[in-house]
Image (cartoon, rainbow, N blue to C red; front, side):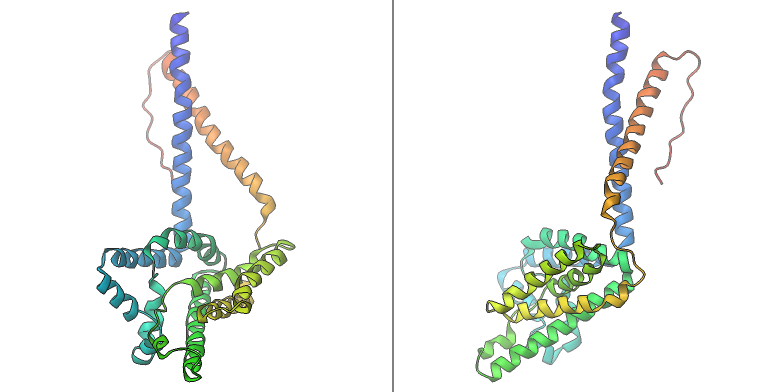
Length: 273
């Protein structure tokens, strides 16, 4: 009796670690697949992570120099138009916000890139970033000439990735199935329009322009199916079954190694690919 209980006790705990290993393997495979299907998003995010580390490690004077040098304000657009337009999209002003931006990149950029392809995604967010920057800075220039803003605004820090995120949020509208699409669209419009009617800044104008450009790129979504939210429970059940099978195999193999008569055969490692 004692020996049988010991075998039963030694076999049971092995099931949970095996299930955990199986789940971890599936998670790693899923992460690799996610990154491979949205390479542009993750390369962009990697560069932002590097520049954020540079800002975090820099002295106050160096940080000020880098932020102004890589800004797309009127001063830099006049001196280095192409460089300032492109490089300003790879910096964020506050490195502590990196994790928030990383989450937003996964939620917006990665989903759009996977859905419509890297080339169409890149054109949408790149065009929105450039157009929103130029138009918003033109508004700043007109306001300076009209004496509504001080001349120091020509050197205001204007960097960041928010214009691209606004464009991704706009085009993602068409991936929402009806009637969820209209609820999402109303949320996008309210999110970007409310700051404008409550005294928004030139940045708020740029966000609204970028979101409108994203909405205007509907042509890129033709032939692309919307999300099927009804398939989510089934996908979760299938994943649970796969993990459960891994656990069941571990339990059965544990009993056979301990109790089954005959010679033991070595098992070759199986590839997770």
